[in-house]
Each structure stands twice: as structure tokens, then as C-alpha cells.
Length: 453
Image (cartoon, rainbow, N blue to C red; front, side, top):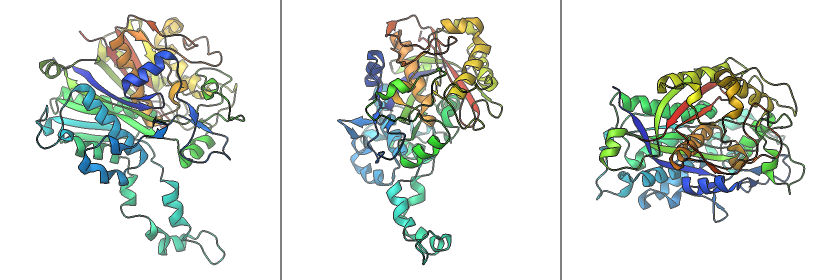
């Protein structure tokens, strides 16, 4: 029999809170974290709202969560990396796991070679001030940007180690250094599916005996000028004319009147352990990872071939890749679709993408789909891209542990096929919960979480 894997620690960061307990309280109370973006001036932007990770009304910094000797390293961490470092620290603390972070005098729970790390990352945007301060030194005689001048002068004015700050694997790099993870490590860059795919890799590594525990998840930041502009042009974000609006009311999953979501930052990193090892050290268990599955969607289903969404626009074709991934996860868990008690979906709030997602879910669940409650997170935290699947995983595990459905926010009317309308938090019997997502890259992933024995 293959080893079984359980989630023993959750480190989650989002606009809804820092740490899974804060986030869970916000979700159950129906309290959205979406608000005006403060990281940069949005006065000329049609996308003034977002989901920022804040503490005491200030953007959170990794300096508060790293060992004192490591604080200098935060200067060369992009925002995505800082959030990953925070989430990993929270996950280790939540799991009661002792790592290198605790200092040289401490004894790690597991040898460093038995701890792995797999973190999904996205397209890390360069900080505007860093990039533009170099760009302005690359003008020609007429004052226009010159590629020739950029090569001769401008590129040399980027700060030292500039490139290392923005490589996607820097998230896992800093986490492994801080916590002494010397087992298998990898970075997956498959947009929204990254977190679930990372968990899948961690599961297989533990199953084959190459690690006892793994940090696993995904983080991304899109509340920056380049991220907002790029995804706004692709039709992923809703435009707001009134900056005094409550932004969550414009973020409506599975609603034909929807024009997009809002940018967010954050995600989650969980501590995954081999079940017997976790029991031996007396660890609490949120949920067991019972099944994992992945597949590739055909071009256009949830990929970049539907770049622009219009309110009430035509629905996308059913995402067959998503359905394939879910069915693979169900087979891996040795259960049927009727055994699923709740779904934590992508709910991207883009008309074509939501239609495609519902089509994929409908292929698996059929007429039962409207009766399966969905845990929709985008009205609370915004679109997290590479962090989306990971935060969904964190919330799904917490729901299984608490045997409760959080509240749902919805400012409109969702498609009748989706059990996603406004609702209060209620107790629920949750034996098996499905977490699933497609992605901008077309990759689809699914995880079945099972109630702990």
C-alpha cells in the first residue's frame, strides 16, 4: 500500500486575512477584503480595486517573519517571494514543525534531506521604480527610448542581482534556505493550476519515499502596475466607474452580467506529511489528500484563446481538460462524483471562463451539480492566479476540519447550474471535498480532500 499524505499545517495569506484562522473568520462572517489598491496610484486606471495582503493597514513585509540574520535578504525579494516566505513560516508554525528557521540550537522535526518544497509561481512583474529608473537612462538624442542606448547604458543601471529577484523559482529558493529543505524541490508555473500541481508533486514524492514532509502551494501578486495592465487588457478584470463602490458586488461568479474580477495577491502553502509520521509526532490533521489528477485543456477552453470577456457574452466550450482532471482525482481517491460533498472551484468571474468551468463540472456531476455547494473565494480575495488553487486548497482543508461551509458573497444571480449564490455560513457534513481549477495556460488540476480518520 502506498503511504498516505495529510495536511498538518496551513499558511495562507490574502486580502481576507493573514493565516488560515483570520481568513476563515472573514469567510464565515462574509467579510470581503477587496478595497482600493494602495500599492500604486490607480487614479487614471479603470481598475482601482484589488485584494492586498495587509497588517494594520500596511502592506505586509517578510521582515517580520524571517530570522533576524535573514532580514537583509528581504531587500532582494520580489513581492511574490515575500508572501511565499510569510506563508511558509505560518505553515510551519501551524503544523508545530521545527525547521532551520528556529535557529542552530534547535533540533529539526525531520532531517533536512527528508523535507521537500514545491511552490507554484507566476509571471513576477518588475517593480516599476526599479525598471523605469534604468529605462530613462536609455534615451536617444530626441528623448525617445533607444534599444541601442539600453544595451550600452540603460541595462547597466539596473540594481545588482536584479534578475535574481524576479525568477519564478525564487519563492521556493528562499523558503528552502530559511527552513533547510534539502529534499526534492521544484517550481511549477502553470497559472491558476500551479498550487494544486505543486501539491500533486509533493504527494507523489512522499508516496515514493523520497521525503517525509513537503512545503507545497502557490503564491502570486497581481496588484502591481504591470500585472493590472496586462491582465486588464486580456479582459480578466472588471472596470469600475465609481471608486466608492463596494468592489465585491462587481465580482460575481458564474453570472452572465459579469465583466471580470479584480486583481489580488497571495495564496497558500501547506505542510504535507506522510500520515504515519504525522501521527507519530502527535500532529493535528486538517484533512487527508485522498486523490489528485491533472490534464490539459484544449486550446481555448480556459486558456488564452479567449482573452477578452464581454458582459453577457457567449459562453466558452465545456472545459474537457478540467473534467478529465477531476475524474482522474476521483479515481485516485477511489470514490465517485456522488461522494463529493462540496466543491472549491476557480470561479474566475470572467464570463467565457466561468461557462467553460461549469461545462466541465457538469460533465462530471451531471444533474447533481446544482445541489453541490460551492466555496467561491474571488469576491473575498480577488484573482490570485498562481496562488488561486493553493488558497482554495487551504480553505478546502479548513472546511473539512471544521465541518462547516463558509459564507458566500454574490452581488448578482449566478447560473442555475452553480450552487454559488449568496449564503450564510452553516455547519455541514463534509467527508470529501473537491478542489479544482483550470488555468490561463490550459492546464487543469484537481484534488480530493478527505475527512481525517
